[in-house]
Amino acid sequence: SMRMEAHIHGTVLLRAGTTTAQIEEALRPWLEYIDEDNMADAKSVHPDEPGLVFDRRRRVLEVCWTGDVGRSFHQTIANALAALSPFSEEASAFEVSYYPEDGKDEFSLVFVGPTQDAIFEAQRGLMIEDVRSLLSRQFSDPEIAQVVALVNQLFERNVKSGTSNTQTSTSPSEPMPMPAGRKHLH
Figure 1 (tube, rainbow, N blue to C red):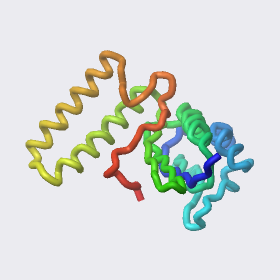
Figure 2 (figure 1 turned 60 degrees about the horizontal axis):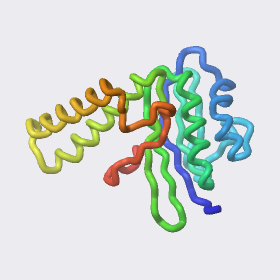
Figure 3 (figure 1 turned 90 degrees about the vertical axis):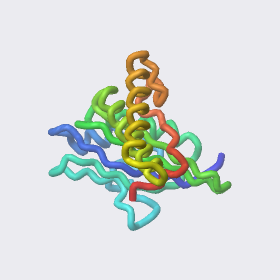
Figure 4 (figure 1 turned 120 degrees about the horizontal axis):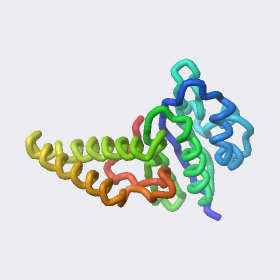
C-alpha cells in the first residue's frame, strides 16, 4: 500500500476538568496507528514540530504533527478527532494534509466541536473568512458584503432543509476539501 506523509495541525479548547487520560483515550485510534501509548511519545517526524501537546492551564490541546502513514489513516484520524468532540468547549478546525509521493497533495479540514450547531457555525465562519480573502483581491467592501450575505443565506437554507452539504449527518468530522488557494495556518 502507498505510504505518504500526513500533517495534522490545529488547536481545540477543552472543557474544564478534561484529563490527559481522557484525551489519550479519545485519540487511541491515532496512537495505536502510530504504535505509541501516549501523547508524549507521539513525536512528529519533524523535530521542530511539538506533536500533541495538552496545556492543562489553558485547557488547550495543540496539534502540530507529521508522520508516515498509509491510506487507512484517513479514517483513523477522522475517528480520533470525532472522539475529541465531547471534550471540546468550542468548535475548531484541524487541517489534515497528505503529501503522497506522486505529488498530488490533499488538504482538508476536520471540525471538532461540542455540538453540530457549534461545528456548523465554525464552518460558516471559516467559509466567510475564505470568501472575503479571495474577493478582496478584486472587489470593494460593499461588493464583498453582497457575496457574504448570499453565503449566509445558503448556510441558513441548508440548516432549515437539514442538508448541510459540508458534512454527512453521521460524522461531523468527515474531512472537507480545502480550497486550493488556502495554505497552512502556520
